[in-house]
Every structure is written in C-alpha cells, then in structure tokens.
Amino acid sequence: MRKPCCEKTEITKGAWSKQEDQKLVDYIQKHGEGCWNSLPKAAGLRRCGKSCRLRWINYLRPDLKRGSFGEDEEDLIIRLHALLGNRWSLIAGRLPGRTDNEVKNYWNSHIRKKLVKMGTTTTSTALDPKKPHHRDNKVPLLMQPDARNPILFRPPATTLDQKRAPNHDDEVDVSDSMSINGGNQLQTGVIMSNKSCCLPDLNLDLTLSLQLAVGERQQSGI
DNA sequence: AACCGGCTCAACCGCAGGTGA
DNA sequence: CTCACCTGCGGTTGAGCCGGT
Image (tube, rainbow, N blue to C red; front, side, top):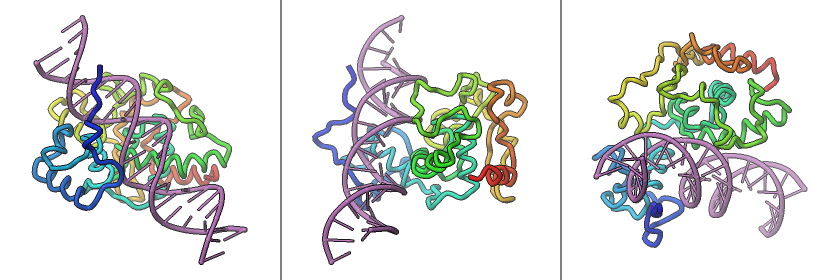
C-alpha cells in the first residue's frame, strides 16, 4: 500500500506566497536540488515535496526564460511533438529555459487550436492534435530516448542531470544542432545516421535550420 | 458599470518507473 | 525477488485576467 505523499492535514495548498518562494530559493541555493521529500521540513515549508519541486522547476529556477514563445520555439515544439507526442519533458528539454508545464500549456492553449483550426495535424500526421495522447499512446519504443535507443535525447536539465551524471552510457550526441535565427543553438541530440531507420513516415529531420522550418510553415499557412 | 465567456497558467493529482533495503 | 519509497511525468483543474457585449 502506497502512503500518501504527504500528510494532508499539515500541508498548505494553492498559490505560493513570496515568503514561501524565498524560503525555497534560499534552501536550494544553500543545499542544491534533490531530496524533495525531506526538503519542505528542512526548509521550514508546509508544502509537500512534490509541490516544492514543481514550484522550483516551473517558476523559481534562475535559468527560466519566461515570456511568450517565439516563432522558432513554436515551430520546434510542433516538430518535436510530431516526433515524440505528448512527451512534454523531452520537448522542453530541447527548449532551453522552458519547462514541460510551460510547453504543455502552450501547446494546449495555442498550437493545438491553431492546428485544429487549420484542419491539419502535426507535420507527421501521426498524431491528432484534437486528442490528448495518453500514456498508452506512447511513442514507439524505437523513438524513446532510452539508453538502448540509438535516437537519444538529453534529458531535461533537472535533477536527472545530477542523479545520472556519472552514467555516461547514455551520453547524447549533441554534435548536431539547430541554428535558431542565426544565433542561438538548440541541441537536438538526434543522431543523424539513425534518424531515418524508424517510422519512415515521420519527418525526423530535427536538424533543419529554423529558417527552413519557418519557411515550410509559412508555406503550409500556419 | 456589470456581466459573461474564453483564455492563460500555476498548481494539483494520480500513475509509473527507478532504486535500495 | 519483493516491497516500499521517492521522483518525475502527463493530464486536469481552477483562479484570475481580459476582451466583448
């Protein structure tokens, strides 16, 4: 039997106050991320560890970009979604400074509607933007960012990096990168030699320059 | 000015996978 | 091998905001 993640009675819920934020930030700056379960007590917060983790990852992390998504980011999301489905954390991992929650919200509020309006699906046509993609509807095994999978993705830069850093078996080839607006580099982590070996109906070429991608999008009227 | 409906986004919930005892 | 715990993920919810009437 699984215990509840926290004692409901002593837990504060809802929006975070500035004081709570400050406590969390102070604690993490001192002790680093991790041990979310014990963090609230140690930091003097009446929140459950999950809530702290979420608050930190989605809102308080210093490397968060915030603000609205650019065209390049939107385009990348569409492409990655076509490739990965609702694997928001993986998609977010390709977007520096963005969180899975942010990407998910943006998809649901902007992109999905846009695509539905167009009466089209994503670039692959494999996924219906109108329907949520449940866990059962997983990306085919071959596409999963798994250590055994030649198509590898760098995990989102959260605690995974800390926990799994020593394991270089799943090192990602990030040598190929996506040039955004001639400036920023987004690392796709897709190994080119394998990208076309599976799901040939999917456009796996995530290494396209954004200019090309945007061009295509304009062509299709997005 | 008041009401209403749609939208956004922070936060919660439940489940699944990983891991250590 | 099994079980319990921890963490991360994806779906969903709801409060607040905003624009239209």
